[in-house]
Amino acid sequence: MQPPSNIIYLASKSPRRRELLKQIGVHYELLMTRDHAPRIDVDESPLDNETAHVYVQRVVKLKAESALRVMRQRRLTPRPILTADTTVALDGQILGKPVDKADARRMLARLSGQSHQVLTAVAVVANDEIRQVLTTSFVTFASLDEDEIKQYVETGEPMDKAGAYAVQGLAAKYISKLSGSYSGVMGLPLYETATLLRQCGVQI
Image 1: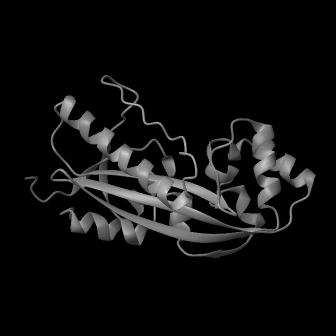
Image 2: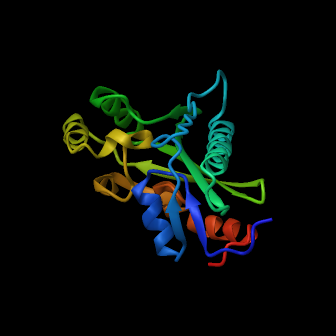
């Protein structure tokens, strides 16, 4: 059994999640599952007829299981592991990260003038047990014309973001309403994450 800890492993490359953990005083070490041997990849492709809610929770669990295997195989000091996954859903359809600029423009054109869901699932592994939490937020975009969409895509900001935008970035000027967790839309809901970490024995 793992003793109480004030440091965790963060199994995520996201700089936003790192910033958010620092914001609430969580100390972490990065645990990359794909950058060093043994390399473990997680297939994040949605399954047929899979809803966004089911998808994001399934993926975050796979990430947690992969990170746990890596910690063991590398014989690292046992610590709680945090993973997270964020997806955007519009009219029941999952909008992942755009594959190219044209895909980003298509996504943003669909989001224009519409409200959509942002779902972020968080998982913490401690003592071989995985605990999860899911947050759902609602974001409304103002109507965007073609030039606005093109200019935003050309900044490069949308290219590694679910739904092709970053709420904490330039896209903020297009968002007319947000209901739910702002930090959850960024990629890590802080209240729910802090609660989950405390439940797993992390001192924060």
